[in-house]
Length: 112
Image 1 (cartoon, rainbow, N blue to C red):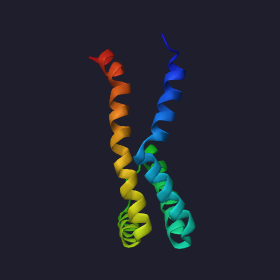
Image 2 (cartoon, rainbow, N blue to C red):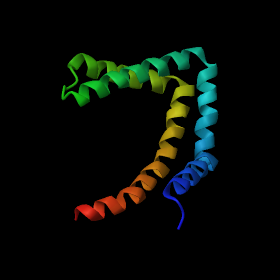
Image 3 (cartoon, rainbow, N blue to C red):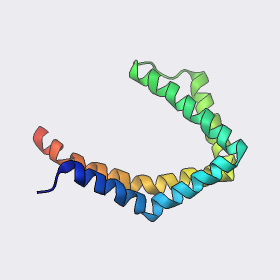
Image 4 (cartoon, helix red, strand yellow):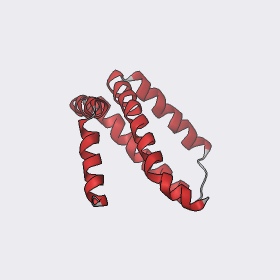
């Protein structure tokens, strides 16, 4: 039987070989090369971090934060480079969701 860590590393290599992964990687290079897109993405990721901290502490986003979230969505959609990046990320996330379901299925079986 294979070592579970070897299998996990093989899975990671397989993910990197997916065309969808490659598309996200190429799109990320385009984001990094575009100063406006890069700044919006950096600001968005920082904002997401703030929201995660709030969620972990049980705080609900204020109306101001909800408006900021909506403004980020509009900025991202208005920037073709970022819209492409997030669209490609969405395609990759289908694989990740499927893999997550498969991996956690044995744990779910234990809880039944």
